[in-house]
Amino acid sequence: MAKPASRGAIAWRAALLVAFLTLSPAPAGADVVLVPDPDKWIETQLKNLTEGQTDEFANQFVKLIDKESSLESLSASIRPINQMGKPAFLEKVSDMKYGSALREVVYLALFRRTDYLYFKFIMKKNTNGWLITNFEFKNETSALFPKGFIGPQ
Image 1 (cartoon, rainbow, N blue to C red):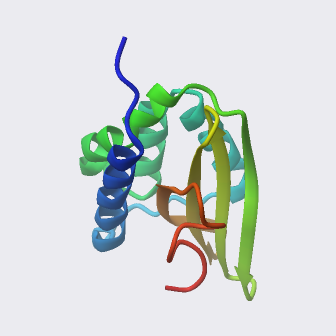
Image 2 (image 1 turned 90 degrees about the vertical axis):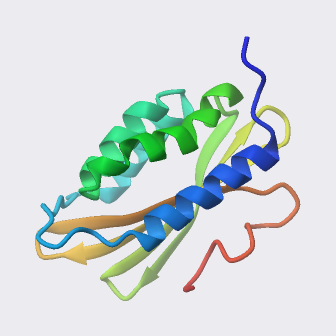
């Protein structure tokens, strides 16, 4: 049986993922994938992710943002979530709206007894749906939200 990932290992992988997804602009002329109902898409994909289908989540997300070349990197960074087991709960804890065109949604999941993971998605309105432009996750036990995780950066 594989040893569960430490909080530090998860935080390190999350930091790499954030840097990768934040600093990698979408390719010019990329196929834009619009999501008509981003809440439904996110809830379905987070359920898959937190129930051990991390590779499926990674596959769906890289297709959505048109970065299939980053599949292995994303899969590797979120795979430790598989070792955490099924969460006790998964709940939307923040839904910040900036006008009617920008949203930042944060979910909180509790794994085991004290392992809290936060999942954040950034969405931007488009002509016929929404672009989900960013995903990141972090762990945090003592603060309400991870430092710098919520609100305009």
